Length: 346
Image 1 (cartoon, rainbow, N blue to C red):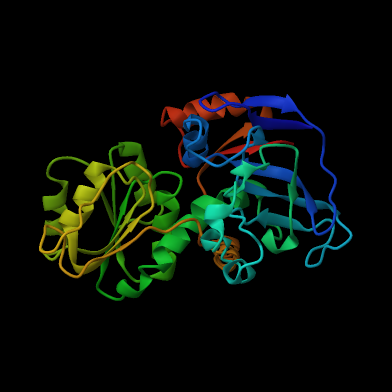
Image 2 (cartoon, rainbow, N blue to C red):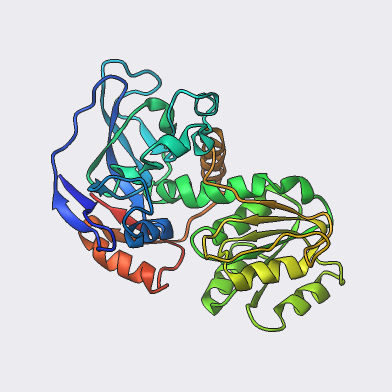
C-alpha cells in the first residue's frame, strides 16, 4: 500500500510502498478514507534529531477517518464495516486516565517513545492504518470522512481548550479567538454552539477574518499596534473574559494578557514559541488563570462528532489525493491552506 513516511529528521516525507498490516489480538485495521494535515506534522518533520522520542521511520497522519476492514481475534467494541474516526493521542493503555479515555494526559506519557497515531506510531496518511484497540474508535455514521478526520484533532483540540474555560463564558461575556486557521475557525463555531458569549476574532490575514465572520464571529479585526485598544473599546473598557490563543507567539501572548479581564481565562493552544513571565506583583491580569490544553479526550471526541452530525460544526477543507501529499505540505508551510488540508487515499 502507499504511505507518507518520515524517514529522516528535517527531511520532507516521501510516498512509499509498504506492506499492509494484519490485525492481531485487540488490533483493528481501518481502511483510510481521509487524513488531515496539521502544523504539528510540520513541527515533527522539522524537529532536530533527539528532540522527540520517536523512532524512524513511521507513517505520518494523526487525523484519520475510515472504515473498519479487519479485526484481531480479541477485538470488542466495533464490527467490520463500521465507519469511524480515530482518537489519536494513544497512551500506555493501562493507567486510570487511559481507561477513562483521557490518553492525552496518560500518566506514563513521559516514558513512551510515541505520542500517538502518526506521532511515533504509524499513522493514517496511507491506504490502511492499524489501530491497537477499538477503544480508540468513535463511530461517525454517515458523516463525510473529509469532515470527520480533521475533527479528531482540529475540532477536538478546540473543543477541549474551550471546555477548560467554558465556566467563564456565561451571559454577557466576551471570548476572543486569536488565529483563525484550521483550529480557530472551528473554535468560533464551537463557542457559538455551546456558549452565549460574544465571539471576537483576531488574525493577521484578511481572508482568515472573513472565514471567522462567515462561521459566526460577531466581529473580527487584524493584528496590529492598536488591536488591544480596539478590543478594550469594544468591551466597554473591561476586557475579554477568555482568550483562546491558537498561535502562541510572543505577540499573541502579549495581546492576550493586555486585553484579558481580571479573573479571566487564557488557554494557549498554539506552539508559536512565545513566553509569559509569571511574577507577583507583575503585569499579568489579577486573578487570571492559564491553561495549556493538549488534544482532548475520547468522550469529548464523541461530543464533537455529535455536534458535526447535528449541523452545528463544519470544517473548511482543501482536499488532495494521497499522491499530492508533497503539494499539500508545501501549501501548509506557506500558509496557503484555507481551513484544513485533507488527503484522500481513495
